[in-house]
Image 1 (spheres, rainbow, N blue to C red):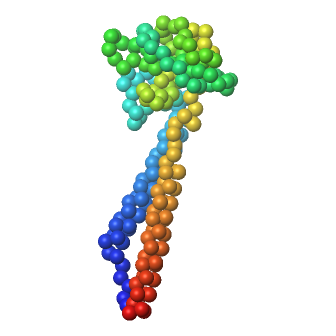
Image 2 (cartoon, one colour):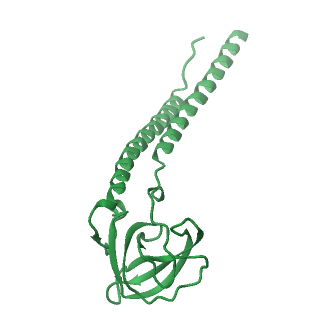
Length: 201
């Protein structure tokens, strides 16, 4: 008896495998782009200071560049888990600063570090530091010199920038391989069943 492929299922599986392989290749391309970007970030500390971006671009954020901002008024505080410059665990105190008139995006300034989450007593002023990633506001400025009696926060590191593209690529290739193996095993079982039924008849 002639063994025939289940055409619809075969097309569906091959299309899915091709899509997963394409996604894996895309992630490899993203990994190459991210590695180039990280190399740029690594050299940023030697570049001249820039004006603090009024509206940061998430696709082209100037991470690790030196900058400064004039915090006209502290309109709020948030404390996040962080480390001091010497590696102690505690709280990084981030001031939400008004930098223009009544409206505007403002700036997020890491004023310093302490062992307690209590809001510091600081009304604002000129702050210089390093631009770092911020999960909520794209960027924030980590003060080079802490204010309000705080200790210096740990400066931003390249490890703060996620770079999972290579692992994602491996996952997509594994998914494609697993899907293909499962399909071939199922196809083999189907053909065995067809052959046995043919022999019985």
